[in-house]
Length: 456
Image 1: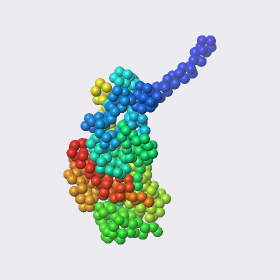
Image 2: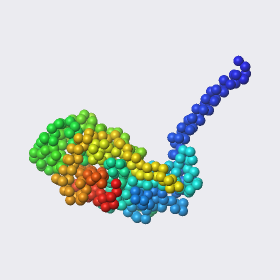
Image 3: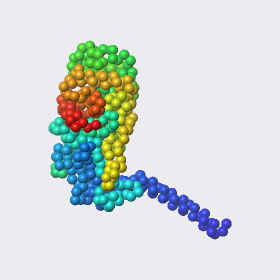
Image 4: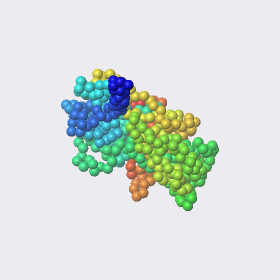
């Protein structure tokens, strides 16, 4: 073998290493390029760590929520809109990780794999984003929540458009308080990242499990004397209902009946239904990770299992997830994933992205979904009253989540059956008491706003 041949062979591993490195670099750039370009050290986008150059953000009707003017970000001229949309729009400093300014900053910058952020150099801004949310609906939800912290969400259960996303506490991004870091959870979007004891909204899950596993459940009756002894423990009801059937037990939110139903079902069946509905697994909304809802009764005693069946014990639920569950019930059993971004326009005004409806992993049989719609409709017509939701053809369930030493959380989840208003809603008002109070009133207020503006 001559010297030239030996040198040729010696170059083979060097060439292979070079090619492998090139492939790895291209792969890393493809995967992480958007994040690298959006690093806060990039002076093209950030000034002193604050996003200063990016595209505009609009609500679904074209109302400006945020944009760059004279090298700084400006926001809506309405203080109520600024506060109510803070957690979905986000802040220029990126403290709210699930806000658009953080979660979609590469889109706002106009980043592309081929051109990087050249549009910033060429046009002085990136892509404009039109959100699915209605600023008016968010403002209505914010005002209805009043002094209470919590979360409000509304989405189109057929398309996935998230038309309202409100989290409290909040602040005015143009005039933040000096003690901002002292406000507990102010940077947390409770709709996406919060978890709560579900209270009686969990009876929807238990009811579905009963429909799946007890063929004659709708013909059975249960006895409620205000409390029931189970496995050495006691489950207490908010009323004394006497002999009560399945439908009425859901209407009147009878703890005693649902405690007995939980015993009939057992741990394995309740767990299977919960997991079928998305508990204990990660879910996303437009790529944003939701807090995981947890249901674990593996080590629960008999009485603890009964409490789990009525929505207490150690169960924790993410509000957006609960909205997705009732949305699946409304949509003939097929869940859809909420989306935040409705469309994206490049600096030339050309629409380069439109949202698509995406199915979620939450699936219920069509027959059981139909039965649950009928039962949840009867909750409103036979218990709460249709006058609580004028012109909405509402189905729903309240929840009063009891907490040790504190006032209960107020819950409401439900959906409209109107073909022209296919909306599901969730409200959690922290320490606000009964679900038939603040939560239900807020749900109606935001849906009435959407009805007036006919947002779909």
